[in-house]
Length: 75
Image 1 (tube, rainbow, N blue to C red):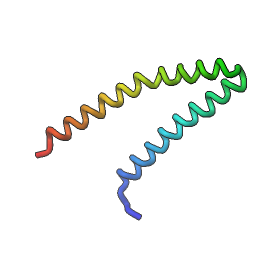
Image 2: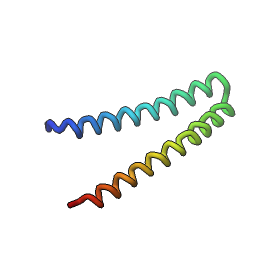
Image 3: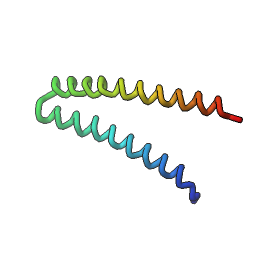
């Protein structure tokens, strides 16, 4: 087992993020469906997807800037 703590932190943060998104979508949509019905669950799902669009755009913009800076500073 390696002792690379940076890789461990990166893996842990990735797992937490994936778990949070799955929990939000699966449990959240299931609760909406149980309480309010199918139509509300579909609307809730679309709203969650709509909320993720700006977050994803910001993430990809920052990821792209990071990639450009790393390529430019390879000396």
